[in-house]
Amino acid sequence: MTAARRHAREDAPAFGVYVHWPFCLSKCPYCDFNSHVRRGGIDEARFVRAFAAEIASTAARVPGRTVSTVFFGGGTPSLMAPSTVETILDTIARHWIVASDVEVTLEANPTSVEATRFQGYRAAGVNRVSLGVQALDDAALTALGRLHSVREALDAVAIAKRIFPRYSFDLIYARPGQTPPAWRAELARAIQEAAEHLSLYQLTIEPDTPFAGLHAAGKLVVPDNDTARELYDTTQEVCAAHGLPAYEVSNHARPGAECRHNLVYWRGHDYAGIGPGAHGRLAIAGARHATATEKRPEAWLARVENTGHGLVTDDVLTPSERGDEFLLMGLRLAEGIDAERYEAIAGKALDPGRIAALREHGMIEMAGGRIRVTPAGFPVLDAVVADLAA
Ligand SMILES: C[S@@+](CC[C@H](N)C(=O)[O-])C[C@H]1O[C@@H](n2cnc3c(N)ncnc32)[C@H](O)[C@@H]1O
Ligand code: SF4
Image (tube, rainbow, N blue to C red):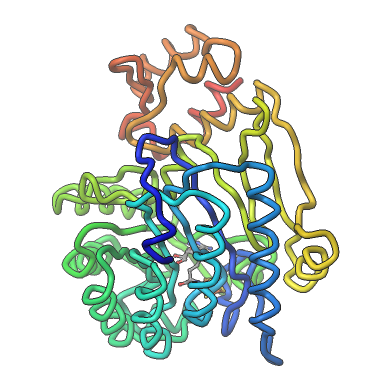
């Protein structure tokens, strides 16, 4: 993104642009993201034109917005040529205003091949990378079907550290056979490398994945509930002790180093979803639109080439749906939600009886007009949200 195309409007409300790259070199057996392997290659130039067309048609619906964050997610965006990333960022800057302090994140797989492209991404305007390290244990990486080793991942982290002002990495825990002491040691090592931000996801057995089949057949055994809880508690304790408290259920950062793009989702602000299977939330003429595009990459491409966009869903949310979503997203954050903003969005107040009961059980707390889930409430967050939203 060229500096000349940037305009400062730091006071504008947060507005994010999510760009989905739906391809991977191989499919990890636990993953149910919208990611596909194409052995025959990908016509990247055709995708670039389609991304540009969808950015233009989205910007025509929500013109004049100031982009505060861009996030290239996947799939594996680090398979994109740097010139693709540059063209997409330039197109965003042609159609919207871009904040001078824009955060531009790209998700990268930590292989040596991908690390060779990091300099190109930086030159294109990316200023933050999120690396899918997943484990600092070679046997675990093999079991997860990853294509990189620990050495390769740490080399990619070192390169990212040199090139990008900000970086983060992901780890998956509660893996088969993982014990709390082993996780404690792995996490402490990760924190030494992570500097300011870590995403730590508990392994989820997603339906219709190879892991789900193995799990159902008893061939893949994940930690039982008590061990999983111990692993979660270890995560909170070790991260907090090293100055990276959880600011969201699975995300830890030094204060001020939070991923601003993900905060756009969790704080209920607007974002545009670009690319196959991308979701968006857009304020148009006073209504909040929930959008989604065609998931299948080639079908998305055909749709964009024929109509200028890949939208398959464009629903106006009711106040009650907006309120539920605000709770669901906002209570994931340690900062919680503003009760008055909930009222303005949902058109009704939260039930005082339910709030009182949840406070009595130590699940939530209130301070300065905000409602926050307590450390005791976070492990049962879904139940807390369901109770408040009922
Ligand atoms: C969509 S992936 C994209 C990142 C990149 N393709 C990679 O795999 O490194 C985002 C993150 O979701 C997490 N993830 C994906 N499937 C998961 C699962 N079944 N359980 C827990 N975490 C998962 C992984 O940590 C991964 O880095
Ligand atoms: S985990 Fe990442 S690399 Fe693996 S299939 Fe999913 S998106 Fe692709």
